[in-house]
Each structure stands twice: as C-alpha cells, then as structure tokens.
Image (cartoon, rainbow, N blue to C red; front, side, top):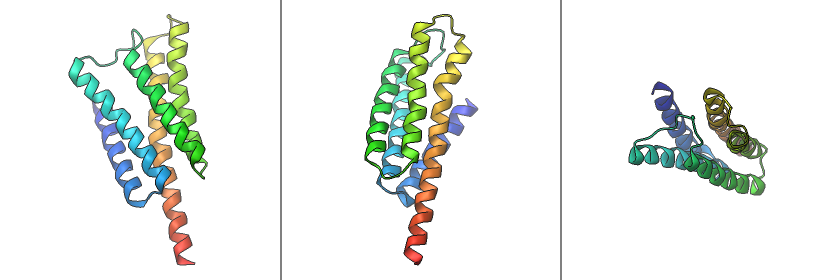
Length: 143
C-alpha cells in the first residue's frame, strides 16, 4: 500500500509540475499517466479486485494499450526526445502482457515487475522532461 500511495503522490506532483512549468507534451503525458492511474484505481475500487498477477488482468492490458497509443501519438508530434522514451517504456508494459499470454508459466512476481516498473520510469521521465523544458524556457527568456 505504501508503494501505491507513493506512486499516487508522485503522479500528482508530476502533473502539477507539468501543468505549471511544462509545455504541451509535458502536460499531455502527465495527464495521460494520471488518467491511467485513476482508471486503474477506479476499476479496483468498483470491482474490489486488485491485480494479483496470477492471471492476465485484461482491463490492464486494454489500459496499457490505450496509454501506449496516446503517449506514442504525443511523442510523434512533440519536438522533444523524452516522450519517445516514455512511449518506449509504456511499450514494455504492453509486451509484458504479451509475454504472459505466450508463457503462462511466467512467475507472477516477474510479470508484476515487468508490468509496473515501466510506469514508474514513465513518471520519472515525465518529471525530467518537464524540468528540462522549464530550464530551456527560463534560459530562453533570460537571453
């Protein structure tokens, strides 16, 4: 539960940071990450079932695929490098589901790490991208 609360806090901080200091790609990707977290949390609260990773959570597969598509769309339109990295780590989550579907003997802990760790990386990359954009904007305005 502590990791979940930390994740929620980090996503909210990154969203607020992106809304305040980020450009359009920073804001869009931060809001996509927030939407993914909100949808996953809402599903868990409604159904009363959180991912145990003993079986494929199909709602998460759909959520990760939609998230990947949205992030990739932003990345292909942005003039920054980091959104492509975020789409790449989101693709890792999608591929984790594919690997689990192919190899049913994949240990649940390995599957959970392969699915969840990229989201943490996406949070960090979005924070980094927002920081870099804010630094560039500050430097450009002081010239």
